[in-house]
Length: 215
Image (cartoon, rainbow, N blue to C red; front, side, top):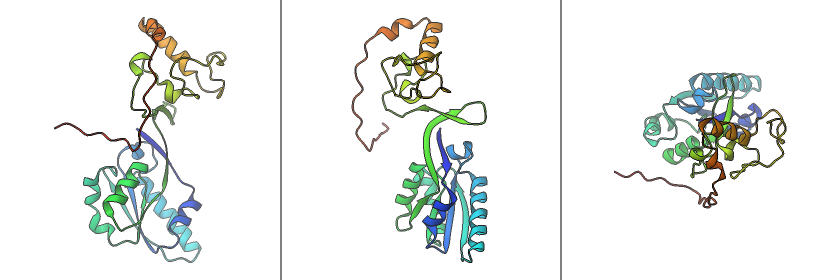
């Protein structure tokens, strides 16, 4: 999933300071799971902004709304009429959600309340860890389900750097070496021979990427 975190309050306040009526919109997908941009977080942010505005003697009217997914125009269309009654939108979606909302709503300015951090999953300790770099050319079938692009500090895709110490990354001592994990996993699977194969370099990515589904 996409993992994001709320921007500093001072930055959010600076972004919307010239507006008197703002709609805060959350997303019911990834950022709800990582506790950054769901309905509950929308409520908390709105409350904090109202309190700050009152303390500063500012007039600020805030609306609250949460879509199923902000990255799908179909769901944004459902709030078009409501959004038209506001001067600006403060999105608690990921970067993709902010852009989809901005394009769909047209003339209403849309601002991000979150910083999109990475693609990842829960670490089982109440946090989240990056596990995918969305490189577009997945090699997990050759690395035992461990992504070296995302989980190696140097994104080495063809083998370890040689600097790991006791199985930990030389860049971050608290992180297991991705290639150590790959080696152990492939050994358990009886597939170490795959690591000896020479893999061609990945093709350069062209941005923005597109995916068209066949009917």
